[in-house]
Image 1 (cartoon, rainbow, N blue to C red):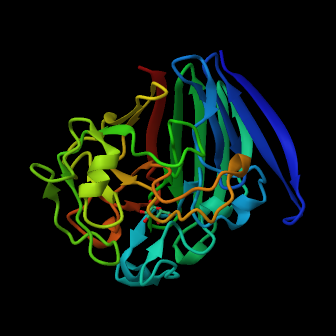
Image 2 (tube, protein in one colour):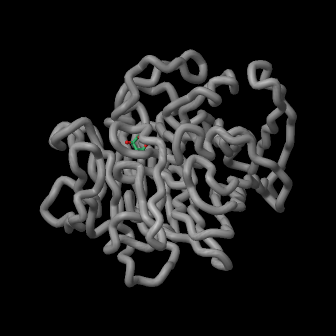
Image 3 (tube, protein in one colour):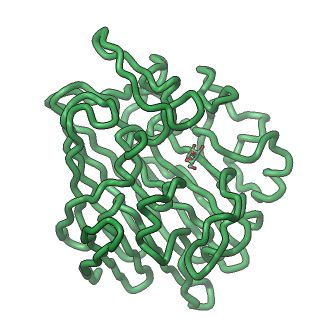
Amino acid sequence: MTEVQREVITLSSAQCSIEKWTLRSSSVSVEIISLGCVITSIKTADRNGQSSDIVLGFDDLECYLTNSRYFGAVVGRVANRIAKGQFVIDGKVYNLANNNGPNALHGGLRGFDKAVWTCGPVPDGVRLSHISPDGDEGYPGNLKVSVIYKLEENTLSVEYCAQTDKTTPINLTNHSYFNLAGQGAPDIYDHQVSITADAYLPVNDTMIPTGEIKPVDNTLFDLHKPIALGSRLKELPGPGFDHNFCLRFPEQPKLEIKCARVEHHGSGRVLEVSTTQPGVQFYTSNFLDGTIKGKGGASYPKHSAFCLETQNWPDAVNQTQFPDALLRPREEYNHITRFTFSVA
Ligand code: GLA
């Protein structure tokens, strides 16, 4: 049985109240706030039974209002990049704010990560709902979104659901930053990672997929067998991983796939991820630079965490060979991702 607790917290600068929900099972405890649908903490035991918080974030919840790194948040209406912040639906051109060089990133200037969601209880968890109005950040249609976080024993599931009254692109993910040694540990070099993807998407110099769906065979992106992150990051050209791994191709049926496993030998902690989404953005916190003051006074340098953002392929709304990115009226957007925590 999961214990579910609700608390109301007043944020003085925003002059508003937000809710904090705590989900507690016998082995894992998770905290979620209604601001940005953010997971602010995940506590799991190491092999000696010592519990640590394994996600990056802030002690002062006000900081989530201005955080530009999306710690723990649900990102939308469209996670990841849209080239030149532009797309066309039924001949109509839509323009978004370009908030990442020449491109649009993670839902815009005020995306779902900055909204205050409405909460309600569900068995073993909490449902957070949000209405994104027609024209919100340039996107068409009134979009009703809900996210259900559930903790069942050692598995945290995140279920996304949405409906629209006009055709819109959509791509929802959770942007938690993990360090299995405990948040605040300086790097993730001693983590072993495997991702069950046969292909990945090379990107151009503004991080937009070139359109090539490249087999991982004989490349540094072949993560079928576990690799030590430290040595692989040294070999990889560029600042680190920030790439979409293709879990399933457009013609394949939507099934839940075990997509990634990360193990930290020092603590014994293991994270396994499964999802119905067609891709996962594996990101090694290349843009963190130690300037953010995190939980417990931690500084978060480059490579101090990893993200496994299960989602559709980036820029899918502009690349017809990628999985369909559009949600149409009377359709339902529905995806689930599960994070399972254990010790080896
Ligand atoms: C995603 C992107 C990264 C970066 C982070 C947030 O992982 O792919 O390039 O934008 O979000 O800093």
